[in-house]
Each structure stands twice: as C-alpha cells, then as structure tokens.
Length: 370
Image 1: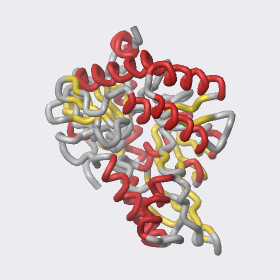
Image 2 (image 1 turned 135 degrees about the vertical axis):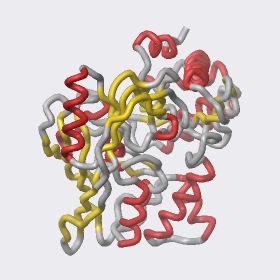
Image 3 (image 1 turned 180 degrees about the vertical axis):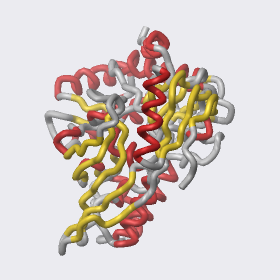
Image 4 (image 1 turned 180 degrees about the horizontal axis):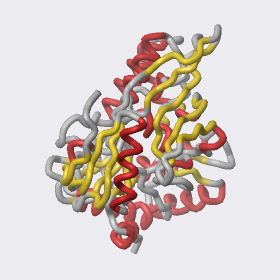
C-alpha cells in the first residue's frame, strides 16, 4: 500500500485528457477510505475547496490551475458481486479505468455496456455525467453507488432513483455537484443479450460486412473502430481533447420548428432536407434529438482555429489541442462556435465538460452570446 501524502503545486495538465491547465495548490492521490478522510480533514482544516479528479476526461482546467485541494481516486478493482442464471452484478471501484471495465465485461460475455467502449476516463466519472454512446447510457444498467459525503466524511449508498439520471447528467453534476466522492458502483449486466444496432453508424458498419447478428466482441471492435475514426483517443498533448465539448440538442416540437425556420432562411435547401431526415429518425415527437455536430458543420466551423485549439474536422463536437493550447484558446474557440451557431440557427448549445478553476465572471464572459 502506497504512503498517502498531500503535495503542493502539482501540474494538472498530465492528469487531463485535454493536456491543458495550470497546477493544483494541493494534490492527493487516494486509495483507501482513510486516505479520503485524511484528505477531507486537511481541506476542512485549511478551509480549501475540493475537486475530485478522476480520469481527467470531460473537464477543462483553467490556466491558473485550482486554488484548493484536488483529490485523485486511484482505487482499482472489478469483481462479480452477484451471479444469477440470466444476470450478473459487477462491483467496480471508482478509480478503475472505464474502458478496462468494458473490456473485462466483454471478455466474460456480459452484455450491456459494449456500446460504451473506448470512452476515456474513470468508472466513477461515468455515472457523474451518465455517459452514453451509440444508443446506450450507463444508467441503463446502473444499480447503485457507494459515495462519501465531502462535508462529513459519511459513507452512503445511493440507488438508481436517487441519482436522477438524464441526458449527460445526474445529481453529481447538477443538484449535489461537488458534494460527494464516488467510491464504488454496481452494474447489472446480462449473460445473454443481443446487439444494439439502432445507431446508424453501427448499423452501417455491420451492413457493409454482411453481418446480421454480431457477437459481443464484434460489437466492441466495431465501436472502437467507429470512435477512432471520429474521436481521437487522447493519449498525448497533440490531439488532446475532453471528448464531446458540446451537448446535443433535445428539442420540443415548437423549438424544432424555430430551428427549421432559421435553417430555411439562412442555408441552402439541401440543409433543410438533412434536418427533416434527422426529424424522421427521431424516436419521439416530444423530444427531438438534433446532433449539435450537424449545426457546427453547416455553420462552416469544421477545422476553425483559435490559438492552438481547433474544431475537429471528422467530429466537430470535439475541440482539439493542436499542441501547446491554453484553456483560454479552448474557451475562445468554444465561445466562437457557440455564438456562430446561435446567430445562424437560433439555437443555444451547451458546453459538456466541467470548467475547473475558473471564476464565475470569467465563465459568464465566455458564455455571453453577444
């Protein structure tokens, strides 16, 4: 067991997938409950804000860093907690790498998370934002999570209903943001399942191969190949990213009609035809999902740069670090994309990553639409 220590002025850039950001005033890697309690006591004694840094995806750290204590969970472990004829319960430590969880589940033939392959980050962070991809979300298989209350150090168990999962959200990034440290989670997976091929890219992949009913391993391989074509997996500074920087739009019928009217007014006819096709593919009349990547693309923003940050050409939801990008570069670019999409389509798109270490005034400046 490693010795627990709290370090000063630790650069956060290497701990993030964007490879951007300044130092943490204090930093602690935590493995045991005692480590977490000691870290929280230090923060209380020093009156410091606390930020829990998992795998470093889906965040953007300020160039000034974080003026508080960053706690980095590093506890690992995946085990079968309960096994029935049809289902198994996986118990996962929050510091485990998410894609390793998926890899092991697929190796064992446990269905339910194979479409969530190749998403960077830790398992604990997966439930914070209710990760989703290719027609599936982690909330589809979630049972419960064990958490530690930051204010008191008390350990609690929260069930699925307690977490209030929605599109890219849970209580952990909304109503109780920064109130809990996620320690462990449990997922219910199926011993026998069938592939979810509803997503067009996945369906097209297997159609081209002439495969009607792929195995769980073939589904994982397909997802990895599809993601690698669109989302550069962040391994080094050049190409660093936080995953999707913008959330997709979920529109009511009346909001969709506003979008359609703006597109009719401001874009060629073929763009409106593409929008109507998106509408036809929607599962629901009450909530119409419009890919934000489509809006960014039609606004001509693919490849657009600010400083050393760039809109990814193959998947414009992703903003890339071209090597040496600052947080200011990234937010200037994100703000430009947001303002352009609003001006040309009438739609307000939202940032997906958590902004860490920024002042409220600075955030509001980047979010301004005028």
